[in-house]
Amino acid sequence: MIDVATLVEQARQGRPRAVARLISLVENAAPELREVMAALAPYTGRAYTVGLTGSPGVGKSTSTSALVSAYRRLGKRVGVLAVDPSSPFSGGALLGDRVRMQDHATDPEVFIRSMATRGHLGGLSWAAPQALRVLDGAGCDVILVETVGVGQSEVEIAAQADTTVVLLAPGMGDGIQAAKAGILEIGDVFVVNKADRDGADATARELNHMLGLGEARDAGDWRPPIVKTVAARGEGVDEVVEALEKHRAWLEEHGELATRRRRRAADEVEAIALAALRARIGDLHGDRHLATLAERVVDGELDPYRAADELVAGLTRG
Image (cartoon, rainbow, N blue to C red):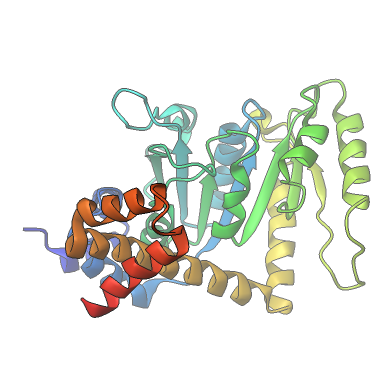
């Protein structure tokens, strides 16, 4: 038996083993998950969540590690959720981010967790929202969420973060790629990493030009800043933190922070409700009823809308 109350209390005290066990319960969709979320609810809503996204090779893991160092210098407790690609054999995370963040391995005020996508598209794991809630409830002041770096499917990070950082690097065609991927629209702060390489200034100019081609902004609207860094040497990282804090202040001043968090909670509730409905469909009818409806659609006896109505009607009768 799992003593959820004790686990939550230990997590609140900053014990990494307890936090790890709670996130494992989330990943495994354990029966205790409802109890865990109920116990954590009074302690959530305090952490500032920063999402980092960008193409593979731009230095997301190195930048994340540098940001952890910067926030620790400010006395913040930091949580890192690094979403790795799943191994096609084990289904687990490749743990590449853990290797790059060894500098923080012994810091009790830093918790780093790698999670596998397990086939989930969008750059995040399906369990990420609840894992973020665990880190928030465990007393983290800042949570950094690093996506897998899969390119054009990473826009989902914007739905999970208070502030989204888009990383680019010179010489990778990232300006055009960012426009294609749609991540220009989700970026709150843009970082040109590896700025000691040739072409960094050109990349920043190109990015600034593309941002200028977007929708017209009113006087009080947020204009995403462009910061150049060399994360491997820690250069420019304090400027990134400064840009993040400015964006946080702007979000709070304009009520956008509360709006984003309500939208995030609504998406989370909807996802849980849909999962419960799918489970109930299976409990009430099993796969046979759905297969029968599908067969009638194929045979032309039913259209898919009427078939769906029958399925929903069965739920309401049940």
